[in-house]
Amino acid sequence: MNFHKLALITTLIALIAIMLGAYTRLSNAGLGCPDWPGCYGQINVPGNQNEIMQANEAYPDRPVESAKAWKEMVHRYVAGTLGIFILILCLVAWKNRKEPGQPVILPTILVGIVIFQALLGMWTVTLLLKPLVVMVHLLFGFTTLAILFWLTLKSGHYFLRSEQILNDKFRFPAFLAVIILVMQIALGGWTSSNYAALVCPDLPTCQASWWPEMNFKDAFVLWRGIGINYEGGVLDLQARTAIHWTHRIGAVITFLYLFSLGVIIYRKSMGKVMPTAGLVVATIVFVQFCLGLANIFFNLPLLVAVAHNATAALLLLSLVLLNYILHLRE
Image 1 (cartoon, rainbow, N blue to C red):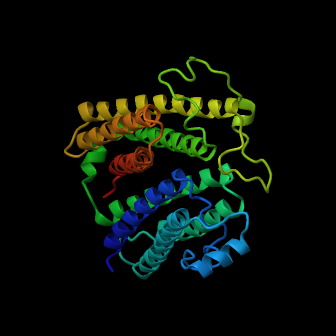
Image 2 (cartoon, one colour):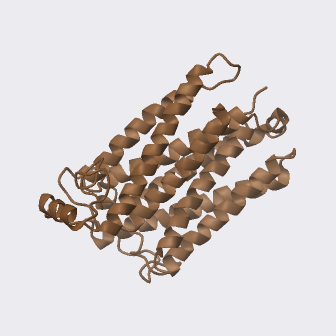
């Protein structure tokens, strides 16, 4: 298969995997299957009454909830498919390695990342939704998506180098935008995995205060040992409030920086593509900010929460596109 088309398909699968992962996490189905890689010792969810009885006997502390189990297994099936496509992508890259401009290093790195992602998926279950594991799993999922999209752009030979020459001054601001967004995504993952999304039900204040009582000492402890079940969260209200408040501050900083950068690029950049790329960044970050507000106003509806995760992925892709344009080569 053509490397470019394969990279594009794999990118789309990665985006679907991220959305399904968010849906699984936000619908509290992360432990829908108490084992890994199967579900109650099977390759799929126990279906008939006999299978369900055997599963409940084997896992008395985690009786079968078919709806949650299927959400988890569908996510695993898609993640497994993604891993297969990444492996094929790497093999095609090595097969075509003598062709001019054929990327080899990044596809090889992706294989290592997807293996690590599989381990993180296992640890997410075996370590009972430990927030650090969940957050790192999320970050590497976004990393996989970003690399795949970069490979898609590079192998497709999109755009002209003149765009980069005309707009070289935006290189560092665009790279900084990626750093800021990744930090905010990490904060979002930490907020979600610690079940802190709903501790501040009001806006712009939190718990009717501009500076509510917060416990930062416990809020960002990355490792709390093994054997703790983190489903539903283990932190007190003050620690969760500190996490939520930090995520809010990060959201404001991220919005102001990315929106301003997008508008400036739209108005000040030259060429045919860069102004549009700036407008895309500004538009997506505006939508993302509105979705964040909607999560609070409407008490974290599942559809809006999943859309918030999906838009974060699209925002990352828009910044990858921006940085790609700014690093074009002959």
